[in-house]
Image (tube, rainbow, N blue to C red; front, side):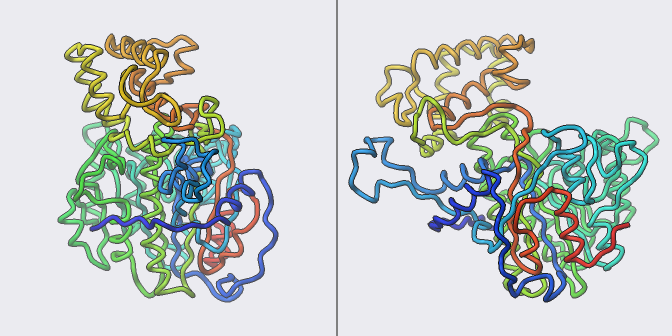
Length: 511
């Protein structure tokens, strides 16, 4: 299946819209549209979640896929040519008629985790970080919107994620656990959910440590699921099948590949959405949750290029739902939102003043995770010299040694002596496999490979991007809506209200 990302769309209002949202401005109530929940009930509901994706992740992707100013090669401030002006490309959902914004705090912190925020989105309740669909006492279980439409409406349900399908966000559609780390128990609940279509990365801990317990994959087969581990068998799935699809190519932590690492013939997130629609489509209705989970992972590692790639992949996947909406405009609702922001990404950096140079990210050809697995592991094993490592750094990230042809300013990728020394210090810590961290080192490296994260930090800074954390932050997240009941999602509200709005539009009762 072919990956297609819409480009060349210029929407100035999108910038203004996101600026209002990011500043916490409340939208004026929009006039009721033909798609208002007052004029019909949703029959087909899509909820897309960009894990870790707030306004900076969206706008960095929109800017990257647009056109930089000419400042990389000239002083744009002196230019009188309008063609030198920057232009952004709108993501697919920027064109949705309604946008809102949601707060994300949980019962633990203003900087929540994915388990608690997904619980809020799918059940309407706050809980502690690391808990999935249970209250703060860990004793009361909350029913999810996916379970309710399955039982009350007889809808089919699909769950798709680029990470492991028993990871926190996908698990929050069907599981009820005090700890998100209860991987085998979550897998058991996946099978017991009787949802119709699961697709994404491999299950974490599919085999319980107790040898007398069956593999989750075997339990799924016994429950009537067609378990697919390759694209050929997944392609053969048809409407009415009940399926558990594991990506043929697995990358870090047995998740799907980052989109900038994805091979030409490797299925994208959009491909799994397309197949999911084919499997779920019926006259009664369906609910589909789609997670771009590795946006979060990239931001934890402060890898802007990989975050951008997976944000664009999510935008592509949304287009598949929009195509379905065009066939069923009076029965379909599409929501695009996020659980929280990750990394404290900032579009703007002291070293680049008022300029941004997104084209410099073209120098990065590989994700941080693939660089770790395919290169850094060998550096440690072979004791590779700094000189040989720097050849790979130039080839894979575009960063060149001081004195190389080009410039270290205005988005140039020639390293300064200071930047080279930073990489050398990080190389020495990595090559020794030194995992110790003093406070200063932890603030710089987190738990990541010092060499890798230093490379991405320097590249990002040259582009005008900065990070404050390797963890989550307390930023609000966007909510874009198209279709039946879209007007309900305008304004500023709490993430628990997303569930309430979905339940109202789907006409289900809280239980």
